[in-house]
Length: 242
Image 1 (cartoon, rainbow, N blue to C red):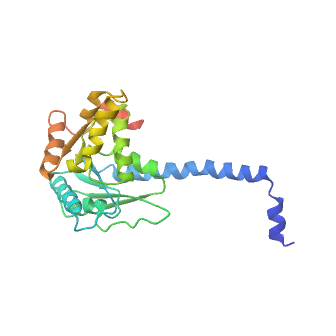
Image 2: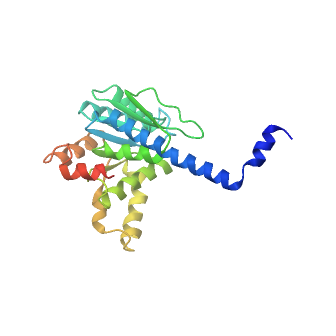
Image 3: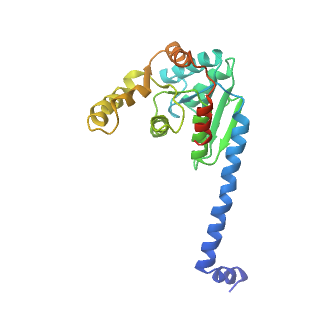
């Protein structure tokens, strides 16, 4: 028996469990460092708009072109644009902002099948943990703009709706882009969720739907026209406990 085999045999289940618990405990410091680093780096980007959509959308697709136009107009209007930092509509959002007046921000994620960061980022921050990344999408956004996408996009949309509905973040515009894509989901919300009392009818007011880039920009400005973009003291407290 080799020395390595002897060492392996000496590790009891109890010792293995203690080692695993120690790793779990130390992992907390890695999570803390992600929050601290991202918060410091992103503190200069307000006001900002988070844009979501499919990573699979090619550059010649109408959705990609639409996302790029929206991001460019938002950037020129003074909004930093935050995306997931990857390909597809995320790239389109970063690209539009990159060539505009305001910063283009990519919140990249490490995945088992590595997501390549797109080239159009003034500020690039990489996360290991989805939940830390999600907090930053909400914490620094004054609006969410959601273009067509798959499970990841739907996950972000439902996260935003849940946080606003439950008061765990401040109210802000949640804008769906391209009505034909979202029509079936909105109809299901109305005919299933409201009819069966799963949500209140007024919860539908959390969602806006627009098709044109200028309409998206106008909707955000209209929402903040009387109150300004800076969070109130009460909203800062909410965001602190997000």
